[in-house]
Image 1 (cartoon, helix red, strand yellow):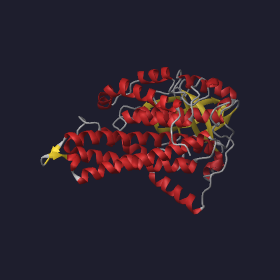
Image 2 (tube, rainbow, N blue to C red):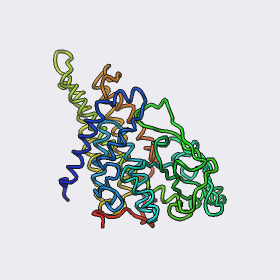
Image 3 (cartoon, rainbow, N blue to C red):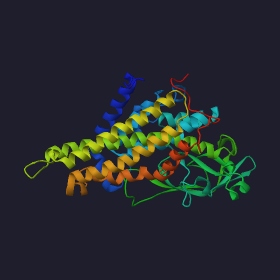
Image 4 (cartoon, helix red, strand yellow):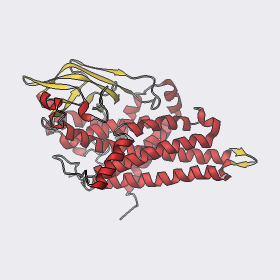
Length: 400
């Protein structure tokens, strides 16, 4: 087993680190305070090739491997979670799903401009009454002549008011919807300019305030039959496949948040004095910092293993679930301890740990709550759940 990163992986991490810390870092506190999403960030990421990082060159991407994607997400969230969220929905949930499930025509029409950063994409499964319960969604997709008519609402969708392309899910079989048979769900590619599609932004969020989150309403939106992703009835499998890729980016990002908490805490602990000595010398402060070290190293190893498995073309749902579960829970713990290390100052946005603490909560909820992943890992151990090959798999790296 080789733990050293390849040169191209190190260079990717360095490039993303410099971009995030230099171009976004100095502005992130004000963007967070203003609850403002800066669209110019997307253009900068596109110019660097980050948005198509692990998409093959023949589809407009940089052709990098999946470990490089994880490293990029770690560096982005080290600065702010909103940056990593862009990669989760645009690259992880949407583009990698199109790469594996899309037809050649769909890849040329939608994936190529996404990989180049000319179009921004997202993924829409969650609804007002359906989150972890994916088969609880109410969106319908009725066949009508040469296409489908989609009606329903998606909620808590990252980049909802920014994206050009969306992967959405709806019921194509009413009978199976009534019986909660997920084989009645189908996936579709919709675009912002389709009639009947409108979006809105959610304000007043606890965290990720520099990111865009909103709703997508489809009011009898007419979608061509050629925009069906996969086949009718494969929507649930496509949704779970996409979540494997999104969860990977979330795990890597949460690892970066732990590292940010650790670095901020170490710096402050060396500067702050109480009882005549730096708080870094107090045993209980050391305990919190040691916990961040432990959780960072474990989280990094877990997500790198998942990335390695993706590179080999191996199924990794169990490993990616474990990485997401551990890293997000650990990041919330690290952020809470970082606030404690900073004391009263940790309660103010004069220091970044206050923002880290607010941002950390979202990842424990989205793309599978900690409770969902707890059940998944128990079911794997008990033999109640097994990973089986799907009709589409991520292409093995290096891409042919």
